[in-house]
Image (tube, rainbow, N blue to C red; front, top):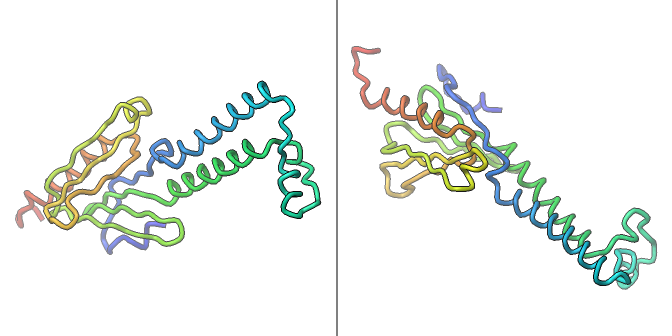
Length: 187
C-alpha cells in the first residue's frame, strides 16, 4: 500500500494508523444507536400501542409486500440504527485508509477512501512539532501531533488519533534535527 510513495533508498522509520476513537463520525454513529435504544424504550413504555412499522410506512407509499425481518420493528429507531451503522462503517473505512508515515527523508500523511491523497512534509520546512492532548484524548489514550510549517499557505498540519503521540513527535524531531544539523562531514 505505501511502497509506491517511497523514493528510492528511502526507508520507513515509523508508521502509524489513527485510532477509531478519534473519528467524530464513529461517535455520531454510537450516539444514534443510543438515541434509538432510548427512543424505543421510552415509546414502548409510554405508548405500548405504538404501531408505526416499516411495513406500514411502505404500504403508505404503495409497497404492499411485507418485510418479515423488520416488519414489526418501530420505524424511527430502526432508521436511526441504519444511519448510525452507516456512520460507523464510514468512520471505520476512513481510519482503515489513513496512514501516517515517517521515513528517513520526510513525513507522509496519506488518506482517502475513493481517491487517495498524499501530503508530504519536508523536514526543512518544519518549524515546530507539538503534542495536543484534550480531556477526551487523555481519557481515550490518544492524541494529536501538530506540525507547524514555515510556509504561510498552510501553517500547520494536524495528525490526529495517535495512540502514542509522543513517540511520533520524537521521531519527527529526530528527522528534523538530522536535517537541521547535517553537515557534509557526517555523510
